[in-house]
Length: 301
Image (cartoon, rainbow, N blue to C red):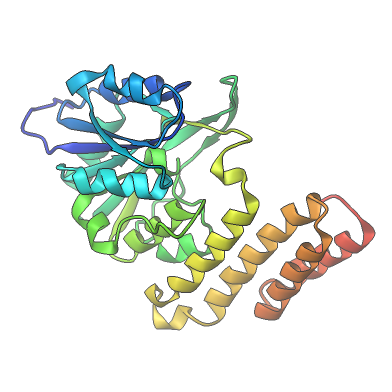
């Protein structure tokens, strides 16, 4: 597309905590975008390494917010409150973008006013830069609320692939700072309740998957997932708040029963599977009984 300076401003939002080892790559990928109407806002969330010095080295090319360590959600929210753009683009400090990402997403949102947010496919890499998988877009539906309750990873690329209309992010209440590890899907659920979603099926974001990443903290993810499903239940149409919602909640319990079992936490694995069976005996019964059998026989799951 032909880029014009009259295009709407995009605010790039990046939390940064002890990321001196990687933050340059993320910032450089944001500054290298072919889309020129952008501001990059980085929140130094109480870093104790050289992150602050690296950020200062960019001078006026980026805006830096300094705050005591309050966590990723609070850092993102601080940047959103500072943002001036019509669109918010999320980028984590250990991820990066390909140069045309913002241009293509803004073009999509500008031509599709029914969309409140969009993402792209993404490469998922390990710490050595090896390809683990490509996180592809789902089908062409723009109504994602029901899907997000049943499949929490349905937004391709996760947070670093998403661009959203700022007024809608503010309308639904920013990130929930009480959540740890499920804050992204929680926001997507709330955005999907008021707008449509689309995805560009081209891997324009690169996501780093590390053993120490928040997504590996299973207990935090479990607690946040359950909390989000409970608090957002009322966003579903009334006819989906019963059996459908219970089936989604049961699915979350079985999802977390498996890693609990693999970690040797047999009591937790049994308890979560039995909760799932009680919530959705018809929808999840066969799965739950199979898991209980495997747990009893000490089979791998």
